Structures are given as C-alpha cells and as structure tokens.
Image 1 (cartoon, rainbow, N blue to C red):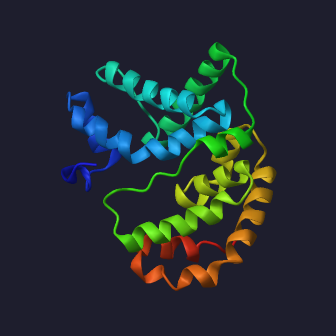
Image 2 (cartoon, one colour):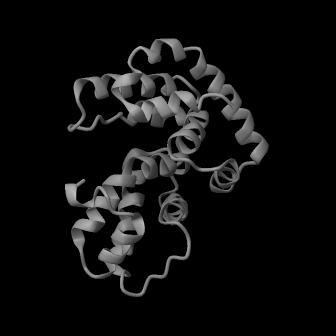
Length: 201
C-alpha cells in the first residue's frame, strides 16, 4: 500500500475514489484483499474464483463510484458484497469443492515489507491457525484478526451465533496451547501482542 494512504481512514479513501483517485482504490484493495479472498473461499472452495469475486467487487466499486451510496462501514460493505458476488459465481460456474481442496490450493502470502522477525512471527501464528478446521480458521480470523462480532460473522456465514461461539471456544483453546511459545517473539510485533492478549474468551 502506498505510504501516503497509511494514515487515511476508509471513508477518506472512499471519498478520494469517488473523485477519481485510482491509487486510493488500489490501497483499499491491498488492505482488504486477504480477508475478502478467505471469505469468498468459504463459499466457492476455489482460489481462482475467489480472487475473481474479490476483483469484481472492486471493479464494480470503481465503475459505480460516482453514484454509489454506502451507509455502513466500508469493511462490512466489502464483506457482504464479496459474499453476494461469490454466491453469484457459484451459481454461474456450478463448482462445489470441499474445504480440503481449498486449504491445499490457497498459499499463505508473506508481505515483502516485513522484517525477518515479522515474517517468522506471522508465519508461526498463521501455521497454528491453519491447523484448525477450515471453518474454525475463518471464524477465528474474522473475529480476532478483523474484529467482527459474533453476530456479524453468523450472518455473513449463514450460521447461528451459538455455532460461532462453539468454534471460537475451541479455537482459543487450541491457540492457548501454544501461547508460551509465541510469547518469546511477541516484543517484535505489537499487533501480535494484541492477538495473544485476546486469546481469553
């Protein structure tokens, strides 16, 4: 993401997009890409289709930028838009794959700007999360890494709040088993400190 956009809010970048700033669109795309692809994979079970669904949402945002009205948080808008686009693609392509397929096909990408310490720590955290069943991984990421409440996750994935709670309880139990191991590296990354502190329900 370009440096000048780092301190801008989503609303400020959306305003710039409406004014024709393509770099602001690119900045938002980079900011939410990984999360949106994961959400799309929940429905499509296909990496290429998921990437296409996410790209389509941003193409439509740009095409309709002058007339588009968004009354909710931009992250929530993207999540719902990607879900709907994924379901549209699923119906069009009629492709149904298991979660085992997508976990093998979807590689974890490490940011090139991270230091070696950052890369190592994120890799360890992601590795631990990836040991969980796919649905539990997604629920955990949406809640603890993206900050979505249980109710919003339940609505997004068409499951009950109780199911979200159950998966989160098991996910936190799994992560807590490795908390001491990760703590030795925590001082290199404040974001991960927040993650570890949040591992108590």
